[in-house]
Length: 173
Image (cartoon, rainbow, N blue to C red; front, top):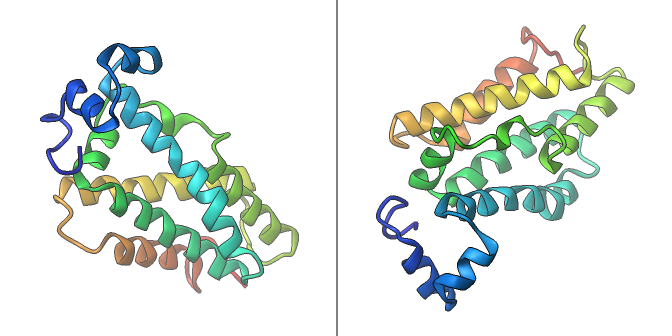
């Protein structure tokens, strides 16, 4: 899919690459989009296996920025065509799932910051988490609309720093 593009890749192409029959494919997936969603859901495993360990022990500001860098990098690794398809496919409801690991991890970081009086806000950790993911998805959507013509990680960090530094809406002490 990364080489040929999503629209040009057929289920037969996927089966050939995976060395399975088309019939076997349909035992696990109903469509090509379900394959895409399975790949997309692997992001949660990435955040559990890689990101959680990397942010452990960092100051809260660095935890958030490191998390956001990984969010951008993961999207970049999946490729513009794949991410554009996910973001602009009306069938994709995975953005609405708040129990996904990446959401749980960020909420835990935010709650810890609030418990230690490092994050000042009138919002709950849930509300800040929702806001963070709306901003992150907005930046990725904009990157897709602009055909990936800017550095996604740099732009993502820029907007989060605006929110978190002095004068931002969510001050990190």
